[in-house]
Image (cartoon, rainbow, N blue to C red; front, side, top):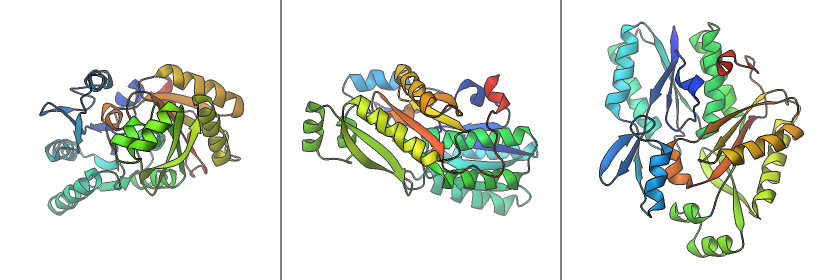
Length: 296
């Protein structure tokens, strides 16, 4: 049997968290020198309390000890593992996991371990994780699940925006002058992911223009594959997600939607407020449009 490891850069809801085939591996958030496990010891609300006071939490990658505990426990239970990791271009987490897997394979060659780079995170990783869990529910093989994950990663569209430009400026993605001018003119960023990195797509004036552009990009990206599951992730603002869902439902009447909240560790970098849409330009050979476990 096989289980799926996801880290805390993958957006989750309760149905995913409780899934018996899922192993959760937290990244860490550091506040005042103390480290907290994302999603276990700290949540998005606590992070935003700190950020509203003008403090900037730090983040760090996975703990090797946590990963080894998951490996040991599942090996003893005769479970193989697939780890869908955060983008290798944005974090050292993938590289650390690769080293640990190589070491573990040498000692326990009978255990099947597969590491897949999500080339993103957030709702994009959620799209892949949902399909993997559905396939595991149906008894598909380790290799089938891994191949489906690779197909989804190759065809995932990321379109998202954040509340203001301050967070991009603090992250070094735009300069301070652009940030100040942009905020004064109500300029909102449209972001995407290319080659595993967050990149600026456009700067647009006002939320409505950004939302309309997100919808157009998503519709164009999906093309003829409208009957699919689309993920909408929000950064602590469910009302924005509901607004975007209503707009997308009109543009994509055959699609179904799942709304998720961004994890605390990504909230540190994206800032307070924002929303993103994640969809596929091509469906994999094995695809579940309405995963049963999401309805539980």
